Length: 581
Image (cartoon, rainbow, N blue to C red; front, side, top):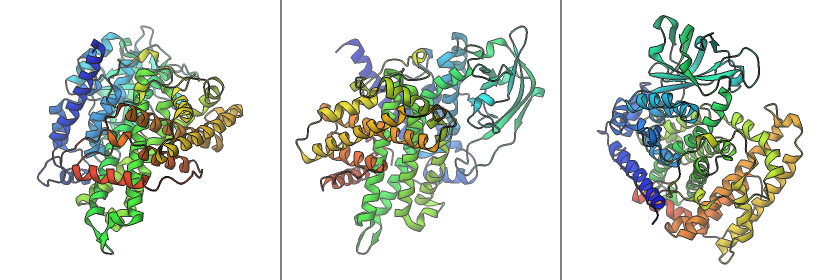
């Protein structure tokens, strides 16, 4: 074993150990005496507060270290590893995941990507000391069009700044030790009008700062969303992150990490929702059988399981592309942020039908389900809604159609390996736009080389070919897009085109994960072509196409694995880990 291989093995062991430690610390969710169990989390949610016991637990665990690169004393080595650790928090409470730490992650990546050594060391010190950091990109008046933001940082002759204006709907604005502020530094319009500043609370005179009242929310009720108003507050020149006027570039590079990672964390909440409904369905009897034996309910449970696996495959490819394919990550990150929340929300909504009237309850086990159903839609907004992510992809479609599709080589195998270590994140290599698409190339290559020996393998191959034909249609339509449809003013047809492309990339990720599992043989279920065929079938149908019928036992194999994992207390993602309880 080489030194690099040994380090990668150690890397995986460290991630797995932290996941297990955090799951054990949270304890049995069904124990009414557990201060971080479902009953206590629901009580905190009803009170509109974060779980105090949950925050204390995460303090003891040192969760902030997950957001700090290892070179700066933290534990951030792999983006997919960060997702796995935070998934344990989101599995228990979305609000706790967002309200305790993810906002700090969203803020800090700006500094890891573009900050100087002093700023990086200082931010690491703040986070490792247990304090929070907030990020403020948007303003309510301008939504996702943050180049129109009015919050001003007026440049002074000595290079310092005077801050004027208001930022709304900031998570932890009142609790943060520092803020990353997307600020107008030039009154002229254009892409060089804004900059990012790292401002510590201690640098702002109290009389120049007003923390706005807290906002009430439908979901994530415990999160502290408020705002900041600054009136002529001076801050030093050293607050500038990166280059003056390049704030949009800083933000777009940072988004490649946050858009890739956040949906994968949220999968923990959908996982818990699925567990709740499987428990109900296997324990509830109707018509002299369990609900889980009723064909419609059984298909709904299996479909939700497949959607979680599909989402996790796409999240895996997205997070690992930041390390392995930094020139392509801008597209994959936006696709993950657009499609994965939609898959998770639809899966949980479908599961609510199985619960029936119990889904409306806000107490007990089904109360936890209802909370996850309320909280998950918040994740499709965050710092960028679905439309904003699609608007990032649409202008790149003609370029990829012209330069990459059906000519680029496939992605490296490591993109699809859940447990393989990764090199450091190459922040400076993250491109603002992609010229290659290796992920879709993996789909094309698979369609040409997949075996078709068994009926299940033949089904996978046929579906791969159908998806490759879809990519060919997307290529033709992308090349024909008029100039106006390559901007934020694109027509609905362009947004539909980006949706179809996202589905094709999800299929490529599913194929990649299955092929690597088959070649490595470590996980018998993931190596089975039955689940891959069933997942691809759902994606083809999502495109509005009618695939050929699958082998009759595909659904049965998936449902059998679902029930096995439920009985063993294992998660429904790619890792099949054993949560507490």
